[in-house]
Length: 183
Image 1 (spheres, rainbow, N blue to C red):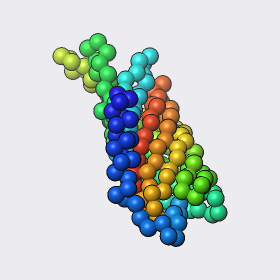
Image 2: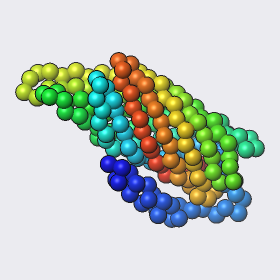
Image 3: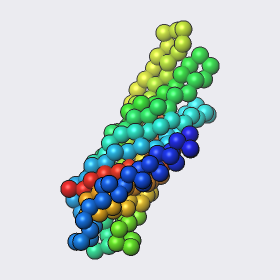
Image 4: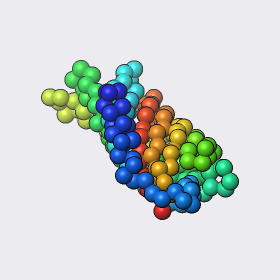
């Protein structure tokens, strides 16, 4: 799994020059942005865990004042995570997030940030050969930290780690990469 994530991040980095913009005025971390997200997803529940691939989209709005940046953001993601435990299969699906981030600009083109907010994940358990099926939405809190690198005046790539803690003892660890545009 880690080889897939590393390959995806390297492919994103190799494609990044195609998104580069004119930097004569320098990059800014102010404005609306949209991004494509992908990475590693580990769901832990019922004393077990399983890994999957996370994919989705995000959007937000940031305001830069000097070297400080504050912003709001939202995401809709999904996951390939699925774990078989005996006759049951646990699986995670869509995850919605709304939160805020604060950061500091380093070296003119890098934003180091921390984030926190509300997350709601769909989680289910189904049985094979039976009518067993339970699913529901789990509310939780997400915290994380990351770095965003401006490729020019509008395009950026980012990498972040985040931890989500949901109801009923379900947790999630994720390492996510993204590529996006600022408007």
